[in-house]
View 1 (tube, one colour):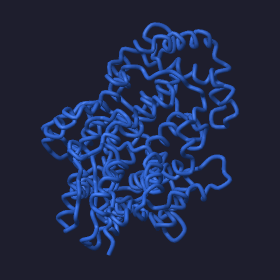
View 2 (view 1 turned 90 degrees about the vertical axis):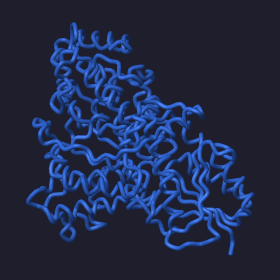
View 3 (view 1 turned 180 degrees about the vertical axis):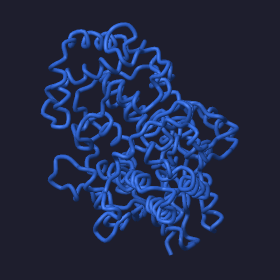
View 4 (view 1 turned 120 degrees about the horizontal axis):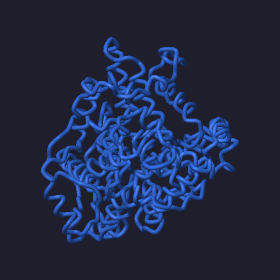
Length: 509
């Protein structure tokens, strides 16, 4: 029997994969901490620690199941700090006959391993990760010939295919989507529940990163790392979400509140994106809980959550593989401005940005509306280059892996793809932020003013954005009303002058 090397990447920690069903003394599983992965973008320290902990725990689990494991720590003397160099050495030293790996979910790693395999004298075999609900190619084939990809169509197809919230071929309650029930501001903080957290002392890992000179962003409580990093912990978080948070999830999933970072969100994204949990098991667990507790949880809460998992998450992956690598170069508006320094410090007078950025730096987390309608909204209004946007989002969040990050930021958030993902740019004035949060209360700026001293920057930048991109957006049927409103406004010149002043002085906002 040939000697086999099986590579496991840091986001392929799937215990349920068919690889692990049988023990084979000829198989060597390899996991590695490498500078290639810590350094390709400036990551949040909690993100690096989270992945290292998850990988180390996964390696221990493999060994406990009787599998042979080679784990290269970041400071291992034989670690050459990149995948292909380490693989070449391990294959040679262990006289490997067959190299096997699972399809990577990032284009750059897929390219790297494809090139490595093409030049390897060792036989190579590639496997599916057995995680997602559809193949890389499914969405591209599903929307073949279409200029835009409508997520709702894809979402309904997934519901039918996996019989989720379905009654035959029709939605269980007669309605596919409860999005309109998911847009409420949190007015009663007493509804909130504490997040399900864990306690770990990670001082040794923090010292490892410092000793190795790994540059990171953000903060960490070295003696109290709270994120779940094992499958057992992930299942606990899932149970907690169902019993404590799901009853209010959909209702308040778009709400933002200074007093609580997590609100009713599940905090499952890191667990899903590292494959410690599978999307289908998460969705089926939530559906089952609802079916058994319909007196406590209504359908709007459940459908809103399930849509995020089998709708948006799978859809964004499909867009990624249908459009890469060209997608990473798209810049529909031709934006060129650099990201202001306060995105790395949180030191801004805009209360909404100060909170959303500060929370991101402190917890490596922000929920989808904070990302879309606060930080992303400001970046788009200010004309930040999509490369700058991608680098920030990819680095700062613990759940950020390029396949899910870039489609959400360059696509939905920045409209840099010209409308493949979203049907319109997601921009707003202070009105939306005030409607969905308590951020405007006590802010240095006045949410009601478009011009003059202390006028909220979002208000003038909002109209400035539409004005400067009128040639690209005026025919968009979803935003025609904005241009009709703009045409009737009598203070256009003052608004544009105010916005120009703010853009010229963007670092001091």
